Image 1: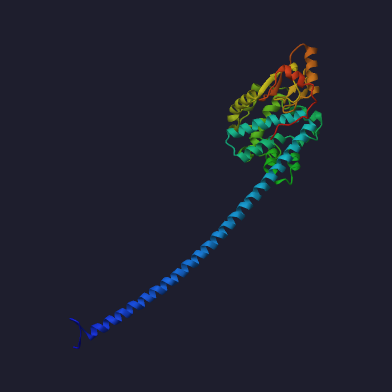
Image 2: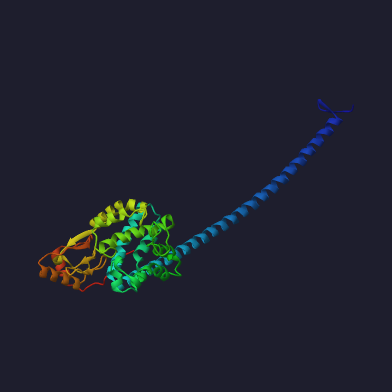
Length: 358
């Protein structure tokens, strides 16, 4: 074997050759690793660029999405305003036709809303039930006064037929208004009976929309007290007793079950927001918390309307003529004035009558 001497060390030719090859192989692998590292570095740079571009695109999409959300919210607000404007227009029509009818709608709407809350109705359902209750008699606008306020049990022939058509006429009035579809359905069926003997479609039980079942109870509670349903006017207890006795027949038992609680809350809300005044205490701008019937038995001003100079004069004149102080229930405000200042205020110009906000 050939050996190579170098200083005090010697190595074989084969060993020197192997070392050179090993060095070359290591250099090759190192060069390959370096090439791969450069390639990976370029790929990382490319991915970073793509990521940056994607981030810009996502930010742009977020901005566009936010803008679209703002536009959608604006459209929804405008639709909401248009909807409320339509509801108020219909409500104003009813008040022009009959303040009694409009006041009845307000009372029924508030009781129906409280009943629906006791039954855990959703917010959208609460609104539909309130609006339907407010406008449930809009189909009666074309009826004569005799038919409008005569007890149902006393109506005969054509007058009775005309009255029974009012739910369908009301539904037709809202035709083409998509926002009122649920409202019009409630109104159409509010004279259905739980036992299926109602009109116009003879629906029964759970087949009647819940809003209509609630409205039926709230409406009849008020109409019984007005003398529009039976041959004589009922007091509050008599009206409630009648409704309870007809559970399962005319009315949904579940609705009747929560009626007492709803009535308690209704009375509590009224008392908390009411203030009783007499003629000498009245001033223009007050809002009535209840309907006011004069000594002649006619309604002089309905709930939600604003006290005017003319109304004050009529009340004071009636008190002098009959020698009694009349009770006027007004909405309690934070800025209530005392009687002395109210007398001066009553000399101010009359304000326009207003309606309770929806």
